[in-house]
Length: 221
Ligand SMILES: N[C@@H](CCC(=O)N[C@@H](CS)C(=O)NCC(=O)O)C(=O)O
Image (tube, rainbow, N blue to C red; front, side):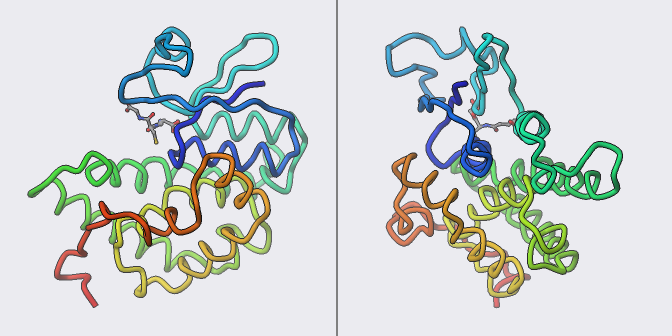
């Protein structure tokens, strides 16, 4: 199978899962801004919405959407540690976090990713802090749903790490910081970051001159 990614984008969470599962895969980085593939062809021929991730299976079937791809891969590999069995309460907890990350965190980082300014950016920062505060309260740890790493943790790691990338202060969220550090130590994560050409320093914004997001005054500590 082949995973289309953009280095450091939400597709990284699928990449991490493929490594957790030990599934053989190919990786192709796409420039989602120009929508050009490495061979010069238009990525939209494969993925009409032009977004990553896109997973192309060996039989040519295509899957999009982080949550769906994650569930497909874990179910197929029967990795119930990563994605508990259908019908169990634990599965809905994992799905609940996946949905929270997609709808409440990922979309609110969009204003920063797109370098929007003014009220849109202020509202996005406010929302990000509100959502991080909720996650901090709900997190009993060490992982999102308890004592083991799941597909939701992979997704949370990739999206919540954007706070570090944009230098949003996280000291008000010590459990989140501890979770990001814990997940960051996994071999699958280290290998996926290296394979996408991302140094640890870049990932943590230490080498990123664009990292500029100040917290709104209400959250500055
Ligand atoms: N709902 C999609 C969102 C994926 C998404 O936002 N991908 C971004 C990268 S993180 C992208 O490809 N953006 C390019 C674009 O919007 O044109 C999912 O969860 O898979």
